[in-house]
Amino acid sequence: MTTAAPEAPLDVLRRVFGYEEFRGQQSSIIDRVVGGGDALVLMPTGGGKSLCYQIPALVRRGTGVVVSPLIALMQDQVDALSAVGVRAAFLNSTQDPDERRLVEQELQAGEIDILYLAPERLKLESTLSLLDRVDVSVFAIDEAHCVSQWGHDFRPDYLALSVLHERWPAVPRIALTATATEATRHEIAQRLELGDAEWFVSSFDRPNIQYRIESKAQPLQQLLRLVRTEHPGDAGIVYCLSRKSVEKTADALVAEGIPALPYHAGLDAGIRRRNQARFLREEGIVMVATIAFGMGIDKPDVRFVAHLDLPKSVEGYYQETGRAGRDGLPSTAWLAYGLQDVVQQRRMIDESEGDLAHRRRLSSHLDAMLALCETVECRRVQLLGYFGQPSIACGNCDTCLAPPEAWDGTVPAQKLLSTIVRLDRERNQRFGAGHLIDILLGRDNDRIRQNRHDELKTYGIGEELSEQEWRGVVRQLLAQGILAVQGEYGVLGITQEAPAVLAGEREVRLRREPERVVKRAKSKAAAELPSEALPLFERLREWRAGVARELGVPAYIVFGDATLRGISLVTPASIEELGGISGIGEKKLEQYGADVLAVVAAHAAAGMPE
Image (tube, rainbow, N blue to C red; front, top):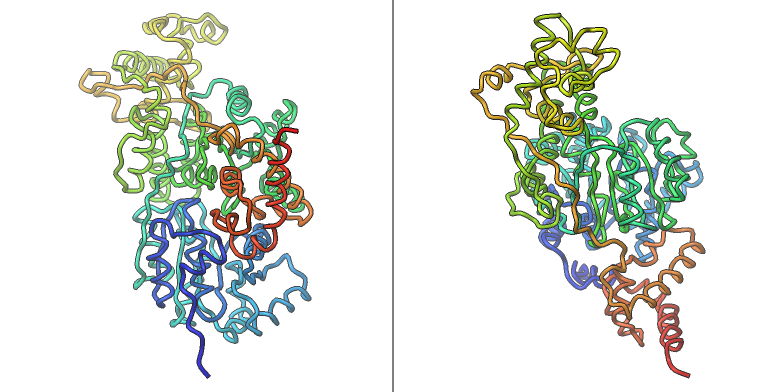
């Protein structure tokens, strides 16, 4: 008896997923794994990482095992694969014993193509013994940066995944992540014993995302302006640093008529699950969250990601903003950043657990994030440069669209530093930014009078700048390491860099905020459709919403917006024409083809003259 030759990866791509060609490095990665080799894959969110392990799992004999930390999302990942005809399942703590037993039976019978496991399950001997009885085709380690102990998403259970290589040395492994510096890549390879793995590092660029960072004034009003003027009715994620600010912001958005939900680790697990399910399944929901939310969120039509507080690292910022525009359509990454953010982050580092080396590492992460915020150059060039990728000005970030002015801030810096030095040396006093600015602006208030600070030589010598401009000076001097936050009350002191500035031996270049970016990212999935295609697109979206409700799955599992756009442009009249549209494989063509053609035909008939 002869065994049938395995199907070619490109044929699987076309038949199952409905795409004509591989993108970027996908083909090379898949060939490597299908051939039995290990791979370490760095590819941006939305770049098509999942296909890099799904197709080898379908081409090679046996079951592909995917290690993922995202228990709450496994059901949606399985639903998405089932929708294209792939036999997928998961084993995790949300299942009762009968459900787990059924999956285990199907697994041993060879009836599952792809199995999702949480990393903690691989610490159980029962799971390891189960996999010993299974023909495993490939091990995929998703979100592989979680193995980095100094990373922003460290998961201790990932440290035990070297067992895959030790116990099943002949099974190829593919580790995947959207974000990792050179040092993190080496750490992943070392901890997962991927010494022989081939590295595939794709471009980190997400050209469809417009990066914008603006000075924080009234953050809630700034956020409302973003949502109302650029993204009305769009799905989005708003990140806040604390649980309290998450709930406050979500309540404020709801009060303004914007459908928003909170998500943080302090909420009841059932509420978190319900809120996440609503965000994935309903259109136009804004999720307000701490960084506890988002890793692996596979919702392709998130049109904006907003940060109301400064992220702790460029890696975290890149990972979080990467949740916007996974479908490749125009999206916005927006951050409001202010002086208090810098003070708060510096204080958190000083108070953090860990040794001096750990605090220095945290400081270097923050310094890189501040450099991104304060740059007068292209944001994208700065962002990609952090990951070691050279690039040219993008023309689609705020500093490209409205270039900020760099100015000589040496004299204002000297005035501020002199005030701090005089207070410390003459009166043994230290204050935060607000009071220092009051002194420079010559304000008359109780604190000034009680401390007789109107007698200081620097009192009132800073009236050439506004309070907001002075706050920008303080913020940038902190970012440049000329000022430092000291003590639990956030008072400011000078660093060893300051004397050179005071002596006029060092120039201080500062960034002046532009008014506002004029050119905006186009919002909505339909933004670039010709006007004649818009009515059909909206009709297809209504049809899709009804099907998704009936099946109890997110709308994008039925069809993504990009596929609906394709249908709206082609207006297919036959199954053959419909099958040629990107994103429609055999299973979806069989399941939805007749209904889609009926929607297109009804739309055409409605537009015909009597």
